[in-house]
Amino acid sequence: MAYRAILAFVLSMLVIIIYDIFFVPQKPVPKNVPQTTIAKQKKQKEAPSQKALPLTKPSLVKDLGKEIVVSTPLYQAVFCESGGRIKDFILKRYRQTVDPHSPPVHIVVANEVLPLGLRFLHKNIPLDTAYFTPDKFQLTLKKGDKPQRLTFTTSLNGLVVKKVFTFYPDDYHIDMDIQITNQTKNDLSDNLVIFLANKWPKEKDRYGFRGAIFYLQNKFDKIKWKKIKGEMVKSGELRWAGLSDKYFMTTLVNKHLQKSSFVVSREGQVLVGEWLTPPMKIKPGEQKDISFLLYFGPKELERLKKLGYHLDKAVHFGFFDTIAKWLLYVLKWFYKYTHNYGLAIILLTVVIKILFWPLTHMSYESMRRMQKLQPHIQRLREKYKDDKEALNRELMKLYKTYKVNPMGGCLPMLLQIPVFFALYMALAYAIELRHASFITYLPFTHKLWLADLSAKDPYYITPILMGISMFVQQKMTPSTMDPSQARFMLFMPIIFTFLFLNFPSGLVLYWLVNNLLSIVQQAYVNRKLGG
Image 1 (cartoon, helix red, strand yellow):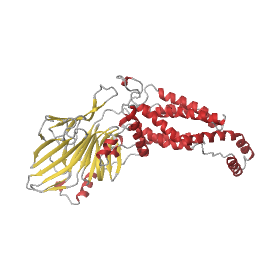
Image 2 (cartoon, one colour):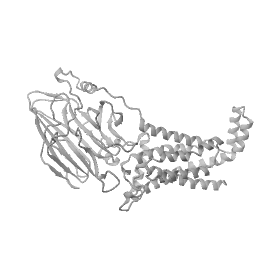
Image 3 (tube, one colour):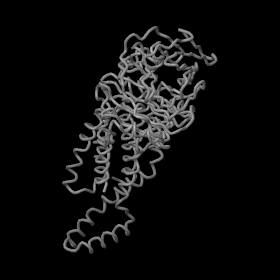
Image 4 (cartoon, helix red, strand yellow):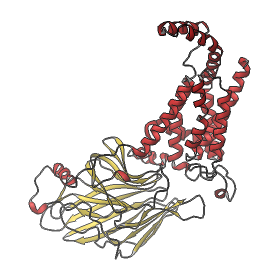
């Protein structure tokens, strides 16, 4: 039975890894669907002259005008006069590599399309490239300062458009208020389109993520980069939407929840997201205010949860999301006192082992008793080899007489599968573990072994030690298998070692420590039962 449990564990792990890489793609939506969606939202017929423009119309990065720099303790945002858009966004507390002297992370890089450009869906008014006049060219916020504003203004085709940004010194969120004043003699009826865009360097992490994320109809959703074909549309009660990689995101939050649409497409190597507001009507002399919250920053679970709007759902650890988040909370609690995520992982492993100790102990005792019953079981199988019903009946009597549960050896292994996968996702995708070193307190930590617990062990020391510990544990565990199963089990440490070679080293550390504790427990049981 233990053989079957381990085999099921390996197969389950392979299925989840393969699913994580090759999950079923979402069906692309034809390019004319966004117009259909908007038409339904408007619930009115458009005249032929009001035909919607193509949704994705890149604005080339040229003649961007002067730079406007906003600096806070957490980030530096560089705007340009052209469109009042962002051309660069630098996170000051995050580095590109484990080297503390490496360049900071840029979560927005100048490319063919710049974030926060505007345009109308139907009217050909080039707001995305029109020059906006800022009320200042430099804005610096220090810790403890009050929020400060930056206003961009342009006048185009009888419309006065203002973009008012409010910055906070101690957080990554930014308020964006768009004011449109109609100074023409005609009604303005249209949908406003707000751009998001990003271009990432070549992917090095095969288990990483980059693509679009949404919170739609009270449910988190995402589309991986490689699954985006043509224009893909999300419509309905859209609380927020954005572009994300594994650790960082640029997101638009719908403050006043109304049905909206978000269109995702690829322009070469650039991922473009376009938020379509509901239809609006502005009479001559009237002003329309549209408010959004921007979050350009790290996917820190507690920070996002505090901010509200269900932004914490952007940190999603898959099928075992709830378990993974609880494990992450415990890890962070240990880190609060140890200041070392390696030690935190070891302490978490000890806690998990203690919680599972009674079940594991029962399992080991059950396997030991099953091993002692093997001569009796073999005799029954020879005696009733032609009568399966009689054999099963006699086996049940034997188990009942000696108070042995043949499934007892499987239960602890099966119960630990969710914990294993949840911890795998947490260690692989939680930004708290990004560049977290096992050996801290030294100025050259980044040059030492296991400098990044979210990455694989560069020297494969922990996977090899894990394989050896698994082999030792296997030799100590009572066997109730036939010879063919026993030969297969000899390959399990090798199979696991190869599986773990590219896993996050923090996860391998957990499994290694778990194996060592299991060896101690198995030795205790063997001694207690005299084997």
